[in-house]
Image 1 (cartoon, rainbow, N blue to C red):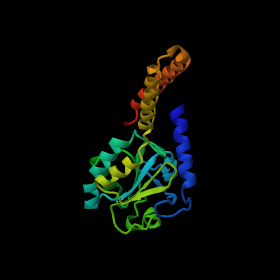
Image 2 (image 1 turned 45 degrees about the vertical axis):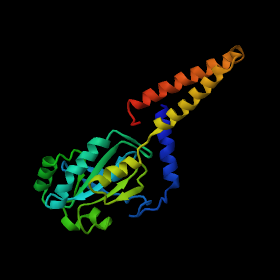
Image 3 (image 1 turned 180 degrees about the vertical axis):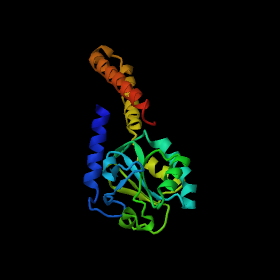
Image 4 (image 1 turned 90 degrees about the vertical axis):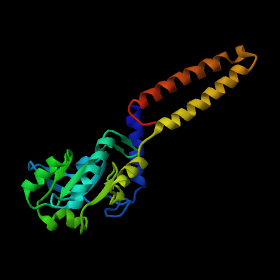
Length: 224
């Protein structure tokens, strides 16, 4: 419950601090996209709010895109369950500029693109491509859980480096506080008249145990 509250507050602050205007620059709210999946279900980009999302423009016929796909798959597998400063998990919203449904679906399967894939199969006339002013692929935008653009055209290790930047790491702060608390406790115990500080010592030891329990719980899910 505490983790959910902390994440919610962090995302709210991020949203308020953002420019909030819709656009294609870092700090803008990413324009809405609403396109069909291979199964014919329409999925909106906004339906992924709450997660870090890579809007990935690609196509089955694009050699550089197919070469880059393994890097995106690697990042997806590594970060899909991570917690971010403004997002719970990471996913990809793949927008294909294909014109053949068969080639598109074969490429999705071959490259193991297990995230949300959409396309209107309009090639360079793709509605999303025009909206995002895509004139070459691969092309991508990284947005946070509030839909705010935080990165553009991140390829190879650059994508993972960008994601690392936004990882939510409360554990280190808690550990630093715990070290400080233990130092104070040690100093208190060094005082000769311990009976005068028995209540303070007991309370401090209780606080230390509670903080350690929180840290241990966080470490099960979060990176140090």
